Length: 119
Image 1 (cartoon, rainbow, N blue to C red):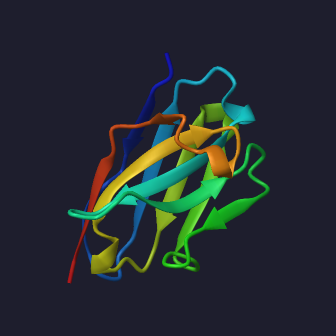
Image 2: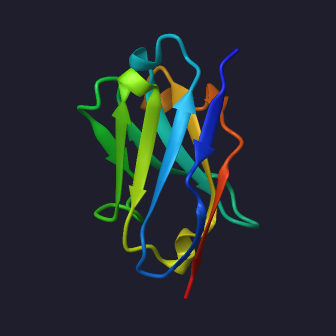
């Protein structure tokens, strides 16, 4: 049974930073593309960032480019999301997900971690 467990969320002031982590109980973690999505109150879940199996290719939503960085450590079955220059509009529940490729992310989901950015 695959489990994705996020951590690292919290309350931060605008301009601050947070690093989210997602530990995956996937035997072949290094074979999967991993991604982060977020969902703000009253809004649909939206794509934030993704990273391919090797870590050599990364993808970002326009709204976070230049501020967020996704990375992975295959030896630790962990994917990270470094979030800098946070804005109040980044406030959301952040979810970790996996897939065979970027287009098929959503195979499994974590429970989410709350990020709140105060102005």
